[in-house]
Length: 466
Image (cartoon, rainbow, N blue to C red):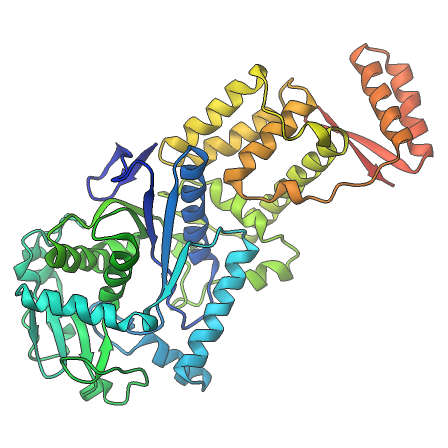
């Protein structure tokens, strides 16, 4: 397996810390509003990464967070808490908002057949772990207090900016002076570990007691605290959107390594944006679509997986309904093809592919193992279905590939076709293979007289009830 590592800006050979177990942490949602398709591109490709690792023989322990407190509208500690903002907008409590949008997120994940993490952890359930981590940073000399918050002093971490490739001096000079909302904050790049229930946050709904007074955690500390609690101080892979590189993930590295003295993440995997008319799909631009919008247009949510995999995860992708409908048509074609194959060869579907199938399986594996080249993997699927392979081998390979594709093709309902019709179809295929087209046409008419029709697609025939 080879992965592009944002830390080195290169594709590297993947070497897990523990050969028997890959530790994977994926940045989860902030549950203050609807999960949209831009988010789901990232979670789908996280799932493809996880499925690929398992497909290639790795064991994976996967942790994902749910942010239900502490994420401000500005990543630089400006603005209000997103949960508070959502609660005001909808005239609900923050707890009700978090519960509703967490449920919507889970529903969306299920609709796209995304494998659930081994551990899904809410920020509000891990306040003690965050407080303990902040205390460690305080003991190690990386924090300072103001009347409003406890801050991480970025000047105490020499490697700050390593992920974004931006020097601290550049970061500091590049930040506007007016974003320093706390007048006691030393540097604009310093970030809050704990907000106190004073000033702009005196009426914050979510708050806990701490050694620094009543308050709530900053956004960045939660991922470090929870990943370290479940996966250890050093983890193999951490994923997120490209918008997290410059601030959120940079801050995670600083606080985690300052606390443990160990490398925090060995492979940083970042996903490019899903755009609409070349602009990032986002809530702030109000140009986003949800899973419900997709279903209202008669598009199967699973076809979105196929759509997302047609573009490499590190390339920006434009979403359009035309592309979504084309992906839905392709998905239906795969379903129909698999159903037709299974109707005749269901008893052979669990057997290992024979040697004639090896080149396709190798091509599929190599594409995925080379930094998740999913467009090439999808192309291999279609190439295999159009190949001279017999139908039994195509069925076995398609089911094998779907372990990564996650399209649930094996659950496609198989039509109960009478044995007489199945035999007629086999006889017709035999006649075609022997260039006896007159007999093949007669057998086709006989099949139709029985109430069924037969279609030839990609070298495979399909039988449907008329």
